[in-house]
Image (tube, rainbow, N blue to C red; front, side):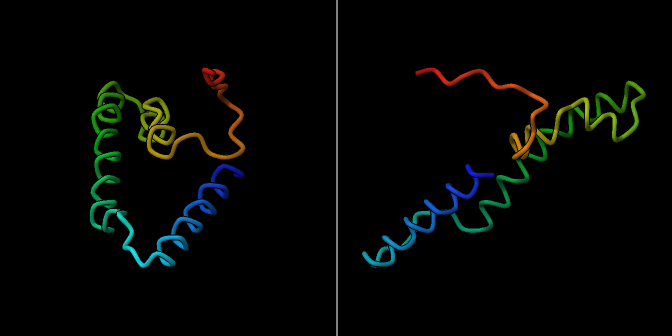
Length: 88
C-alpha cells in the first residue's frame, strides 16, 4: 500500500509543480486510458476462453489464466508470490 500512496503523492507533487509553472500535463486523456484498460482486459480473453474450452468453470478459468495479477499487478498485502530481488 505504501508504494501506491508514494506514487499518488509523487503525482500530486508533479501536478503542483506543473501548475506553478503554468504548463499542461502531458498525461493522456481519459479516453486513451480507457483504451489501455481495454487492451489489458482483451489480452485475457484468449487464456480464459482456452480454460473454458477445456471444461473449467468461469472462476477457475479466470484463476488459472492469472488475470487479476496481469491486469492489476501485485496488490498490497499479497504474500502468495515472492518476486525476485531487484537487480542492483
